[in-house]
Length: 264
Length: 153
Image (cartoon, rainbow over all chains, first blue to last red; front, side, top):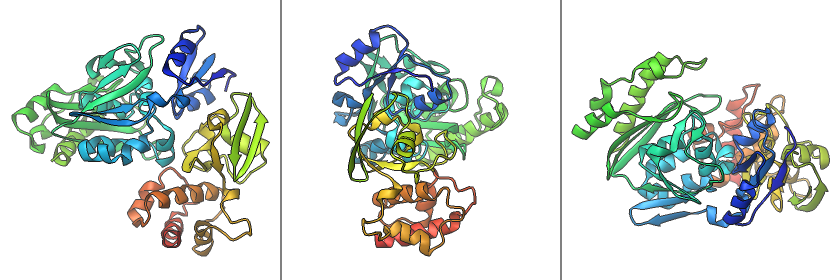
């Protein structure tokens, strides 16, 4: 790992100032992706701004028909939150399936989203539930947030503060995971929300995406059979040592069917 | 950079580089070599310790992230008089180790597991231990040990 300057601001305002002070500064959430990347020298920030000391970035709040989760909330906290379990069990279960228990004790919601790893789980929750990403500058709709592989709509100096998840009528997330890394080879969030049916797929392509054809079929009839005959073309899907594009295409249909079945 | 934390009940402080990993600080600065480095990529769990009561992988955390934290390593698990923790005793009793390399991480992870799942089924133990790899593939007795320890914790 290359050397860097370290700062641990106490407030969001101080973090924003530190981030804007030139150099190649990066924000540190739990570090479960960033520290690993820095060890491999894939990432070499000049400054590391640790968000671990900022109280306003933590916590889970029920606000009317949505749940707002602070960016520094650990995956394990989301997984065991009674509020999340009661209102959006699909989200609690997704958080409880990220990585392993040690990773879940450190990794954060904001960190996962800002990183936007194409095989991460949380992007499927944000896009599949139609969540809103709240930053220190604005509110970003899920549809506008994910821009591509490791790319988001976040601008220089912008910090994720929290994410608001609308409570769906029903939803479930099912993933086919890599047994070594526990990342999603394919993960599907199927949800019936106040703003319609949403099907979001992670792990399969360069970034999380929705499947309109499945959403239309599920709008007509919420049933596993409705998606069983719908497949996503393999053309734009990832192909690697873990799974070919054709296999991922097959898995999308299978995971979608299981997610719809689980979301009763 | 100066860091301070509590390790196994004792206050420690030291001057370290910002890039020092927590596991490096524990092993090389404090000379507590019970915490192992296996894969060094955050997958095998051999470096598992407790930070503020929760199991974490110390090879994937900076020492400065543990500023003011309460750290527990395998050396701090037994009682001061040498009486083994019920999890350590169960690993001994049920032969939950072969070469022993993964054992400190397994034990620390398993203690956290039982604290969160007081009476775990075999299925729960297998699922929740998926962040700890045993290259001897000694999982069967490890699961037995965790189940037995859960009854005594």
